[in-house]
Image (cartoon, rainbow, N blue to C red):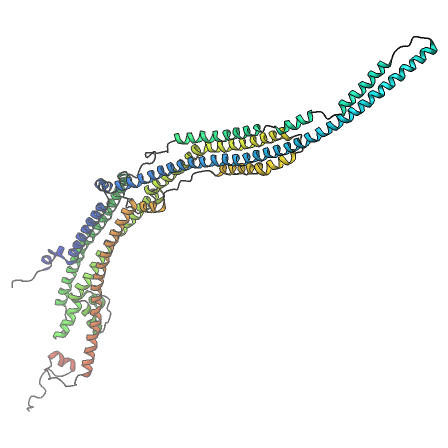
Length: 606
C-alpha cells in the first residue's frame, strides 16, 4: 500500500518552521525595529549646529536689545545723577553762603548799631559833663587864683617888711626873697589848676570808640564766602568736565550660538553614549532571542519525535478498547502532553471530569491564545529591558549634565550676575570719582567753618576784649552764628558719611524674562528625550495589556469549561432513566459476565 502520510523524518524536515521559532523571529524583528526607532529618536532629539544657527538668528537680536536697554539705562542714570549732584552742590553752596551772609551780616549790622548807639550816647553825655566840669573848675580856679595873687602880694609885702626889720637889727643889707616865694606859690597853683581840669583825651577815646571800624568782620565774611565757594567751584568744574561712563563692551550680551555650541559637544557625547548603550543592549537581546529560537527548534524536534513514539505506542498497544469513547479518551491522553505526563508517566489517577477540563484548556485554540499572550509578554519584557537600560543611562547623563551645567552656572544667571557686578563696580567707581572730591569739600568746609569761628572769636576779642561789652557780644555771636555753624558742621559730616549713588541692579522682571527664554540647555534636551522614552514605555504598556487580554481569554476558557461541566452534570441529573435499546454482547463480554459462548436455549422460540 502506498503511504500518503508523512513519516517522522519528513515531518522533521520542516521543524524550523515551528510556531515557537517563528514567533521568536517575529519578536526579534520587533526588537530590532524598536531599537532602530529608539536610536532614531535619540539622534533626532540632540541638536546640531544648524539648530544653533536657527536659534541664534531668532533670539540674538532680542538679547542684544535687552543688553542695550540695560546699558543705556545705566548711562542715563549716571548722567541724571551727575546733573542732580551739580544742582545739589550749587544749592548747598548758595545756601551756606546765604546763611552766613544772613546771620553774619545781621550780626555785624546789629553790632554796628549797638556800638554806634552806645558810643554816641556815651560821647554826648560825657562831652556835656566834661565841659560843665571843666568850666566850673576853671571859674573856681580863677577866683582862687585871684585870691591867691592878693595873698601872695600880702605875703610878699610881709616878707619884705620882715627883711627890713631883720636888717635893722642885724645891720646887714637886706636881701629881697619875696620873688622866690612868689614863684613857688604861683607854680603850685598853676599845677593844681591843670590837674583839676578833666583832660580832653577822654573825649578823644570816646570818639575813637564811636568811630570804631568793623571792616575786619566784613572782610572775614567776604573771605569766608570765598573759601566756601572755592571747593564748590572746583568740584563743579570737575563734574562738568566729567563724562558719564559708557562702556557697552564691558559686559557682552548673551551669545546664543556660543551657548548652544558649548553645550552641543556635551550633548553629542551623551548621544553617542546612549546610542552605544542601546546598540549593546539590543545586540544582547537579539543574541538571546536567536539562542532561544534555535533552542525552540530542538525542543520541537523532541516534541515531534516523542509524539511519533507515542502514536506508535498507542497503535501497537495491546488494548481492550472496543468502542469509540474509550478510543478517543485514550487518544486524548496520548495527544495531550500534560495528561500523558500526569497519567502515563507519574501514574496519577485523575477523574474524568478533570481530564475533560484540562483537555478543554489545552485545545489547539486555547493553546494559541495562551501562546500569543506568553509571546506578547516576552516581547514586552525584552522591550522593557531595552528601555530600562536606556533610561538608566539617560539618568546618569542627566546627573552629569546637571553637575556640569547646573542652574547657578547657566548662561542667563551668569550674565545677570556679571551685569550686577558691573553695576556695583560702576556705582563704586562713580561714587569714588564724583563724591571723593565732595568728601574733600565737606572736610574743607568743616575746616573753613572751624577757622571762621576761630577768626570770628579773635576779631570780637580784638574789638571788645577789654570792654564791658565783651561777654554779651560773645554770647550773641554764639547764639546767632556759632551754634548754627556747628549744626552745619554736623550736617557736612553726615553728608561725608552718607553721600553716595545707589544704582539699581537688573530688575526682577528682566531677570525672569531672561530665565523664561528657551536657551538650548543640555538638561532640557535630555528631559525632552526622557519624555519621548516615557512615550515608548506607554506604548509597550499597551502591548502588555493586549498580551494580558489574551491570557485573560485563556483563563476565561477555564470558567467556560466549568460552566459546561456544571451544565452536563445538571442535564444528567435531570435526564430520564430510560434504558436504551439492548445491544448484542460480544464474546469477550460474555466471558466477562460468565455466560456461555453458545446459545443456551436453542429450542426456545418467541
